[in-house]
Image (cartoon, rainbow, N blue to C red; front, side, top):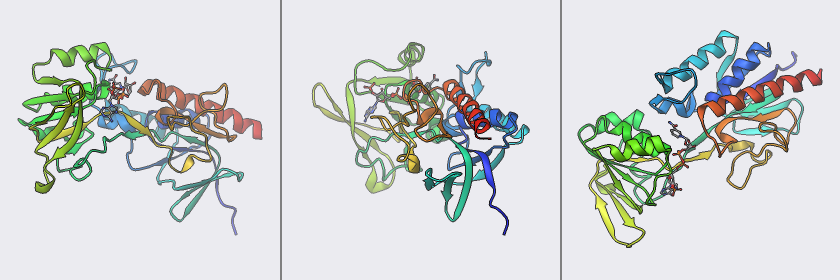
Length: 314
Ligand code: NAP
């Protein structure tokens, strides 16, 4: 019987972190295998214009940026495989990654699984998610709400970006925020506050999405946290943009996480985990910066660390 293949390095995730790790490990002749899950390209594929990725003075389309990273990784020999890892065994050497009835063996592993949108959990949100009016992606779904009134929940850069993008299609965009000051960067906040189609709804939390009986969003019930008064915004679309939850899935445990649920790198490193040869990169391990460029930087660090570790094992 032939020996099972043992990969030098398996990279899990195809966002900025995963694909940058792929470019670096491929150029180091490590012949990386990248496992891609349910959202190839990661969060940037659902964003519109990326204005702050260095090297693009005119901005760059998020989908195009990811497509280019993928082409660049492929050019140096990266292999891609569709696989959702459901179980791991990091006690064995090589490490084992289990996906359905398949087991992938790897000397080193880079986990770059990103983060998923956080939801509010209010009644109606789950029932009306998807084609029924509740969504987390203006770029994907904004055009369905042409000439309609919609609401965005959140006060960070994501919410600001979603609201501004939606002004291209919608008649009116309510931006519902639980405080009286935006968390978004000043440049984004200024654009939001100056936009004639955006109406700020300050100090308000969502209570329920209305329209469940009709299978379509008809309003957002909100409560003013200062007065306790409830009211309903008459909207057809609801865009939830209140941050993200790290995708640590089947990896934690055994990998350690911090109090916010993000992978916690070992002392003195940003990417090394508590398991030798296993690295983390990008939004699954970073709740501070969470930028495309910092994710790419962590992917690069993880790749270089994996390369050095593999060389030490020889
Ligand atoms: P974020 O900065 O964590 O903001 C989340 C927002 O949602 C906050 O305003 C928060 O309110 C609110 N929120 C959280 N939980 C809530 C709940 N249960 N109900 C109601 N509101 C809730 O997340 P983000 O906007 O996704 O941004 C994440 C990171 O990506 C940031 O570093 C951001 O700068 C970056 N980013 C950058 C760009 C860009 O530069 N183009 C675009 C998008 C994101 P509080 O303010 O009261 O906490």
